[in-house]
Length: 158
Image 1: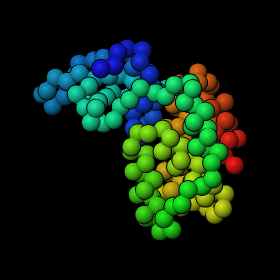
Image 2: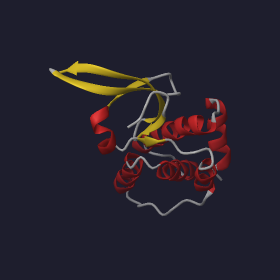
Image 3: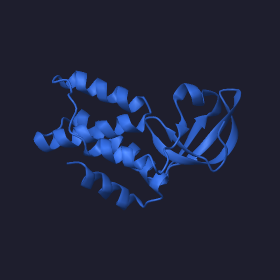
């Protein structure tokens, strides 16, 4: 159970801070929600409290774990399927896992692939989404401004 002020990561959406716990009546059912504010775009997300474990919401990584994220970003590209459809699905599965190190791997692989040859529209969308997820967690784990977190990612990828 999380509390107000906790910094959490919501798979596929990114990291944020729990601002409130609210009860809402939706479709005739009263449910409790975490209200999470995300550092990017100052967006609010409501997360049903009863589904937190199922969704994969977790505390954000520690400041110490940031070095591991940057190690993943600076590593060589991992083998990816040649077929874009399989590659797309594999990358989506990594993002959905909620594991920040998997997300970092997706960002690194797609950035390096983009430098080699242009990404398809679908892969570009995945890259942008994965990058936003990664940036939001780095901002909160490192207490950094968005511009610094973004430039750190770009500078670390070989």
